[in-house]
Image (cartoon, rainbow, N blue to C red; front, side, top):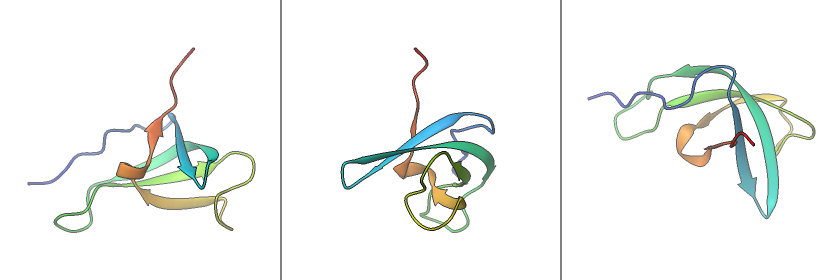
Length: 69
């Protein structure tokens, strides 16, 4: 059974690492690459990225949807 992505392109997501909040835009989603893994999400980071990449694929389990205010 394939785990379906919970995000859609165009949504804003956030990722927190070492008490730093990073926000990015979902550009593309893909199904889980292997059994037992989460779907992968291509994120274009806004501002300074968490690593040295402006865009990168990350597992959806570490991302959280940015709430609309």
